[in-house]
Image (cartoon, rainbow, N blue to C red; front, side):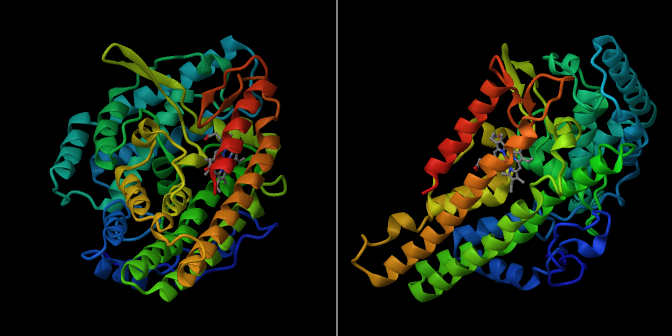
Length: 458
Ligand code: HEM
């Protein structure tokens, strides 16, 4: 298998309340997962959950998790995409969002026109197709999986930039229902989405966020490059959280697999130890949320207008005569929460349809495998077997941790969502333009979703 990253082993200090986001010494480093990955690979032939985790790491992860990406060593035919995104990035955001539809339409047409022009001039679609079809046929001579992951991100963010064409997101953009994308952005997208086993026209947390970091932890395609520090720093901290969640998620996936292998091998004391490990790792992971989702780190004054909007989508296309609208990104795409829910036997938050649209196939399959092996349906009734009771207690501890997270998430996100943004209609990235006659009603719908989820967490 490919070597895991050459970044330093172990962990650097956890982001605290006052780091400069640009200061790399304060960032959580990717861990050295080598030994755990060997262990998972060794277990793969005899336990299907280990197999699905090994498969995710080897394929989507390019040999590690979070996924390894390369944004530099690409075939020449693909490189213009990155150049074009980066060249146009300073034009994307406006320091003062206009409330005038005419001004906004002009801004957007200018951005789209430029992107179209540069794509036509510099991208040879036949060459792009040639490279991606070779990969699809299993021939990786032309590019590595790391580079493929990087390119997935690049095309995804180019599409989101083209979709909105000005940030903050404005009403005229929200009112579009269908957008005709340049073929340079359509052709590769079909291949990329097929490879990852997802169907949406929009991106997802894996493409737009996880793959948007190089191995040194630098974010490659930023949104608000020419805006004030408060916006740029909040943007960095916000997206960095999602990489950190997967860095800290890895030992959780590992411990959950080991707990299942131990249980299935009849070693219940070892199973309990691994479940306790899950709790310990989860505590650390949740602190990423608690330490960052507040005004001292991510400013609610700028989040809604400058950070969230880019990741929305809210347009669609006709498929077999029926209009299908796609949503953008949400925390609900994050693998670690889906995997833990599945492991605990909690019903899924996303519908089957949304899973297929936004969650890469190998992530979905890992979660389904966790669900098939959930321990809770296999324990003796309470009071009949002391070891089973201790397993249930350990599982309950994890459930309680998730409940604390969900209760906190419910309240902490409100100041971000209720920020005035007169340039747009109420919208979340994950749920698109919100129905309801007022912002209050729209937020109530979201709150109901979160309360229901909290209730289901048991
Ligand atoms: C300003 C920051 C955030 C806001 C405004 C926000 C808002 C929301 C909203 C409105 C929902 C319900 C609608 C939907 O499914 O999309 C949601 C769901 C969700 N969010 Fe967030 N979120 C934020 C940050 C985060 C972060 C950092 C995480 C991960 C630690 C996260 C994890 C989740 C999860 C897992 C769900 C699905 C429901 C669940 O499993 O409880 N969110 N978020």
